[in-house]
Image (cartoon, rainbow, N blue to C red; front, side, top):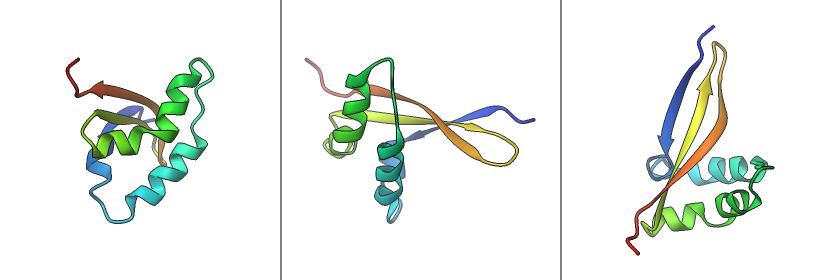
Length: 81
């Protein structure tokens, strides 16, 4: 069984026509029981912050033999404070 991971930048995904529809569906389904602030940011702000170059969001997918499943996110703050 193939257990590789694929990391995609939200910014790169949004360059594809109609990708925002798919991403919004993914956002709606995302749950983070350990940190509700992360869940809230991901659902409400990640696309807008990405478009404004404030924060870059990366999506991690676990690839199996049959499909790729979304499993993690991580962020990179692009602003200097």
